Image (cartoon, rainbow, N blue to C red; front, side, top):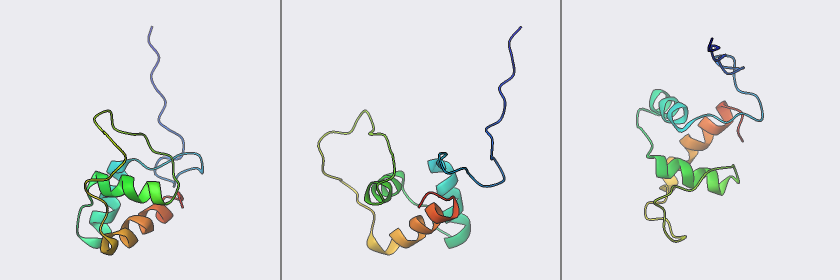
Length: 87
């Protein structure tokens, strides 16, 4: 008989230090707080700058970013990191 998966601990009550918010959660937070939706490549760039763990996309080639996060948008994404306890 298959067992049901338990929901992740900490959902809805903030995240534990070792848990990171998903890109979807970060995008939703920024959209609700600031009224615009960040690109996933911007979130990845901000995570890289903050030395947060991230995975490289399988389609990524080379080390240069084609679409780095604009400086005006970084503060909102970093605020979302702080909200989720990532920074």
